[in-house]
Length: 244
Image (cartoon, rainbow, N blue to C red; front, side, top):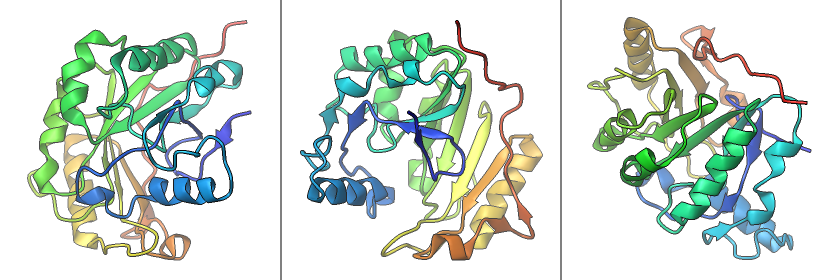
Protein backbone atom coordinates (compact mmCIF):
# COMPACT_ATOMS: atom_id res chain seq x y z
CA UNK A 1 0.00 0.00 0.00
CA UNK A 2 1.35 3.44 -0.94
CA UNK A 3 1.96 5.98 1.79
CA UNK A 4 -0.28 8.96 1.08
CA UNK A 5 1.36 12.34 1.57
CA UNK A 6 0.17 15.59 3.17
CA UNK A 7 2.55 17.42 0.83
CA UNK A 8 0.34 19.43 -1.52
CA UNK A 9 2.30 18.80 -4.73
CA UNK A 10 2.55 15.00 -4.59
CA UNK A 11 0.40 11.91 -3.95
CA UNK A 12 2.70 9.52 -2.09
CA UNK A 13 6.15 9.22 -0.56
CA UNK A 14 8.77 6.52 -1.02
CA UNK A 15 11.87 6.32 1.15
CA UNK A 16 14.54 3.88 -0.09
CA UNK A 17 16.90 6.01 2.04
CA UNK A 18 16.23 7.64 5.41
CA UNK A 19 18.25 10.20 7.33
CA UNK A 20 20.25 13.22 6.25
CA UNK A 21 22.51 16.02 7.53
CA UNK A 22 22.28 19.80 7.40
CA UNK A 23 23.99 21.66 4.55
CA UNK A 24 22.41 25.15 4.47
CA UNK A 25 20.06 27.50 6.37
CA UNK A 26 16.93 25.86 4.94
CA UNK A 27 17.79 22.73 6.94
CA UNK A 28 17.67 24.45 10.35
CA UNK A 29 14.17 23.29 11.32
CA UNK A 30 14.05 20.09 9.25
CA UNK A 31 10.63 18.40 9.54
CA UNK A 32 12.14 15.04 8.52
CA UNK A 33 14.63 15.14 11.38
CA UNK A 34 11.86 15.84 13.89
CA UNK A 35 9.75 13.03 12.47
CA UNK A 36 12.63 10.52 12.41
CA UNK A 37 13.47 11.18 16.06
CA UNK A 38 9.81 10.84 17.00
CA UNK A 39 9.50 7.53 15.13
CA UNK A 40 12.65 6.16 16.76
CA UNK A 41 11.24 7.07 20.17
CA UNK A 42 8.10 5.14 19.23
CA UNK A 43 10.18 2.05 18.51
CA UNK A 44 10.13 2.10 14.69
CA UNK A 45 12.69 -0.39 13.37
CA UNK A 46 13.11 1.60 10.17
CA UNK A 47 14.25 4.61 12.20
CA UNK A 48 16.36 2.76 14.76
CA UNK A 49 19.30 4.89 13.55
CA UNK A 50 17.30 8.06 14.05
CA UNK A 51 18.28 10.62 11.42
CA UNK A 52 21.57 9.03 10.43
CA UNK A 53 21.73 8.24 6.70
CA UNK A 54 20.48 4.67 6.35
CA UNK A 55 19.85 2.66 3.20
CA UNK A 56 16.47 0.90 3.19
CA UNK A 57 16.82 -1.85 0.54
CA UNK A 58 13.64 -3.47 1.82
CA UNK A 59 11.71 -0.48 0.49
CA UNK A 60 13.32 -0.43 -2.96
CA UNK A 61 10.64 -2.39 -4.84
CA UNK A 62 7.58 -0.85 -3.21
CA UNK A 63 6.55 1.32 -6.21
CA UNK A 64 6.43 -1.80 -8.39
CA UNK A 65 3.61 -3.13 -6.20
CA UNK A 66 1.55 0.07 -6.48
CA UNK A 67 -0.45 -0.54 -9.63
CA UNK A 68 -2.47 2.67 -9.64
CA UNK A 69 -0.45 5.45 -11.34
CA UNK A 70 0.54 8.15 -8.89
CA UNK A 71 3.01 10.96 -8.30
CA UNK A 72 5.69 9.85 -5.83
CA UNK A 73 8.08 12.06 -3.85
CA UNK A 74 11.36 10.14 -3.57
CA UNK A 75 13.10 10.30 -0.18
CA UNK A 76 10.92 12.76 1.65
CA UNK A 77 12.95 11.69 4.70
CA UNK A 78 16.38 11.98 3.12
CA UNK A 79 18.38 13.23 0.11
CA UNK A 80 19.15 10.70 -2.63
CA UNK A 81 22.33 12.61 -3.53
CA UNK A 82 23.72 12.71 -0.01
CA UNK A 83 27.43 11.87 -0.04
CA UNK A 84 26.78 8.79 2.12
CA UNK A 85 24.48 7.19 -0.47
CA UNK A 86 26.66 5.03 -2.78
CA UNK A 87 26.37 5.47 -6.53
CA UNK A 88 25.46 1.81 -7.02
CA UNK A 89 22.50 2.28 -4.68
CA UNK A 90 21.39 5.39 -6.58
CA UNK A 91 21.49 3.23 -9.72
CA UNK A 92 19.19 0.73 -8.01
CA UNK A 93 16.71 3.49 -7.18
CA UNK A 94 16.78 4.74 -10.78
CA UNK A 95 16.28 1.18 -12.04
CA UNK A 96 13.08 0.83 -9.99
CA UNK A 97 11.81 4.19 -11.27
CA UNK A 98 12.47 3.08 -14.85
CA UNK A 99 10.66 -0.22 -14.33
CA UNK A 100 7.70 1.47 -12.57
CA UNK A 101 7.13 3.64 -15.66
CA UNK A 102 3.44 4.24 -14.89
CA UNK A 103 4.35 6.42 -11.91
CA UNK A 104 5.77 9.93 -11.86
CA UNK A 105 8.77 10.27 -9.53
CA UNK A 106 9.87 13.58 -8.01
CA UNK A 107 13.41 13.79 -6.61
CA UNK A 108 14.52 16.84 -4.65
CA UNK A 109 18.07 17.64 -3.51
CA UNK A 110 20.14 20.36 -1.89
CA UNK A 111 23.30 18.55 -2.98
CA UNK A 112 23.25 19.87 -6.50
CA UNK A 113 27.01 19.55 -7.02
CA UNK A 114 26.83 15.78 -6.62
CA UNK A 115 23.69 15.66 -8.75
CA UNK A 116 25.53 17.44 -11.56
CA UNK A 117 28.61 15.23 -11.18
CA UNK A 118 26.64 11.98 -11.35
CA UNK A 119 23.86 12.93 -13.76
CA UNK A 120 25.58 11.64 -16.91
CA UNK A 121 25.86 8.19 -15.29
CA UNK A 122 22.15 7.88 -14.52
CA UNK A 123 19.23 6.57 -16.59
CA UNK A 124 16.92 9.56 -16.91
CA UNK A 125 13.48 8.38 -18.01
CA UNK A 126 10.63 10.75 -18.86
CA UNK A 127 8.77 9.84 -15.65
CA UNK A 128 11.64 11.06 -13.44
CA UNK A 129 11.41 14.70 -12.40
CA UNK A 130 14.44 16.33 -10.81
CA UNK A 131 14.37 19.36 -8.52
CA UNK A 132 16.62 21.42 -6.29
CA UNK A 133 15.80 23.35 -3.12
CA UNK A 134 16.79 27.02 -2.93
CA UNK A 135 16.05 29.03 0.22
CA UNK A 136 17.80 32.33 -0.54
CA UNK A 137 19.98 33.98 -3.16
CA UNK A 138 23.18 32.43 -1.78
CA UNK A 139 22.07 29.09 -3.23
CA UNK A 140 20.94 30.09 -6.71
CA UNK A 141 23.92 28.14 -8.08
CA UNK A 142 21.96 24.95 -7.40
CA UNK A 143 19.66 25.89 -10.27
CA UNK A 144 22.57 26.01 -12.72
CA UNK A 145 23.65 22.56 -11.60
CA UNK A 146 20.10 21.31 -12.20
CA UNK A 147 20.05 22.85 -15.67
CA UNK A 148 23.11 20.78 -16.53
CA UNK A 149 21.23 17.51 -16.03
CA UNK A 150 19.22 15.71 -18.75
CA UNK A 151 16.07 15.38 -16.62
CA UNK A 152 12.98 15.91 -18.78
CA UNK A 153 11.22 17.93 -16.06
CA UNK A 154 13.35 20.19 -13.90
CA UNK A 155 11.70 21.92 -10.95
CA UNK A 156 12.52 24.27 -8.09
CA UNK A 157 11.38 24.04 -4.48
CA UNK A 158 11.85 27.53 -3.08
CA UNK A 159 10.95 26.41 0.43
CA UNK A 160 11.44 27.45 3.10
CA UNK A 161 11.81 30.77 1.31
CA UNK A 162 14.07 32.79 3.61
CA UNK A 163 14.76 35.81 1.43
CA UNK A 164 13.94 37.51 -1.86
CA UNK A 165 15.15 36.08 -5.19
CA UNK A 166 15.01 39.12 -7.49
CA UNK A 167 17.61 37.67 -9.91
CA UNK A 168 15.90 34.28 -10.21
CA UNK A 169 16.32 32.86 -13.73
CA UNK A 170 13.84 30.10 -14.62
CA UNK A 171 15.23 29.42 -18.09
CA UNK A 172 15.09 25.68 -18.70
CA UNK A 173 12.91 25.11 -15.63
CA UNK A 174 9.48 23.50 -16.04
CA UNK A 175 7.95 24.10 -12.61
CA UNK A 176 8.42 26.33 -9.54
CA UNK A 177 7.10 25.65 -6.02
CA UNK A 178 7.17 28.36 -3.33
CA UNK A 179 6.44 27.94 0.36
CA UNK A 180 7.11 29.37 3.77
CA UNK A 181 8.54 27.45 6.69
CA UNK A 182 6.17 25.57 9.00
CA UNK A 183 6.52 24.02 12.42
CA UNK A 184 8.28 25.09 15.63
CA UNK A 185 10.56 28.11 15.20
CA UNK A 186 9.24 28.83 11.70
CA UNK A 187 10.87 31.86 10.06
CA UNK A 188 8.54 34.36 8.41
CA UNK A 189 8.25 34.59 4.62
CA UNK A 190 7.41 37.97 3.08
CA UNK A 191 4.46 38.01 0.69
CA UNK A 192 6.48 40.30 -1.56
CA UNK A 193 9.11 37.60 -2.04
CA UNK A 194 6.48 35.06 -3.12
CA UNK A 195 4.63 37.50 -5.39
CA UNK A 196 7.87 38.54 -7.10
CA UNK A 197 8.69 34.90 -7.91
CA UNK A 198 5.15 34.33 -9.16
CA UNK A 199 5.50 37.31 -11.50
CA UNK A 200 8.84 35.98 -12.80
CA UNK A 201 7.13 32.65 -13.55
CA UNK A 202 4.17 34.29 -15.26
CA UNK A 203 6.48 36.31 -17.50
CA UNK A 204 8.49 33.21 -18.38
CA UNK A 205 5.36 31.02 -18.73
CA UNK A 206 6.60 28.59 -16.12
CA UNK A 207 3.92 26.85 -13.98
CA UNK A 208 3.82 28.25 -10.43
CA UNK A 209 2.67 26.37 -7.33
CA UNK A 210 2.18 28.20 -4.03
CA UNK A 211 2.43 25.53 -1.33
CA UNK A 212 1.88 27.43 1.90
CA UNK A 213 2.51 30.56 3.95
CA UNK A 214 3.95 28.46 6.73
CA UNK A 215 4.15 29.35 10.39
CA UNK A 216 3.53 27.10 13.38
CA UNK A 217 -0.15 26.72 12.47
CA UNK A 218 0.28 25.77 8.79
CA UNK A 219 -3.40 25.08 8.02
CA UNK A 220 -4.54 28.34 9.62
CA UNK A 221 -2.25 30.47 7.45
CA UNK A 222 -3.44 28.81 4.25
CA UNK A 223 -2.28 28.77 0.63
CA UNK A 224 -3.88 31.84 -0.89
CA UNK A 225 -1.52 34.34 -2.53
CA UNK A 226 -3.12 37.67 -3.41
CA UNK A 227 -6.61 36.18 -3.54
CA UNK A 228 -5.82 33.02 -5.50
CA UNK A 229 -4.67 29.46 -4.92
CA UNK A 230 -1.85 28.66 -7.35
CA UNK A 231 -1.84 24.94 -8.23
CA UNK A 232 -0.15 25.04 -11.63
CA UNK A 233 1.69 21.93 -12.84
CA UNK A 234 3.88 21.24 -15.88
CA UNK A 235 1.89 20.57 -19.04
CA UNK A 236 1.97 17.29 -20.90
CA UNK A 237 2.69 15.17 -17.82
CA UNK A 238 -0.20 12.71 -17.96
CA UNK A 239 0.59 9.46 -16.16
CA UNK A 240 0.91 6.23 -18.15
CA UNK A 241 -0.92 3.02 -17.35
CA UNK A 242 0.92 0.06 -15.76
CA UNK A 243 1.90 -2.92 -17.86
CA UNK A 244 -0.25 -5.98 -17.32
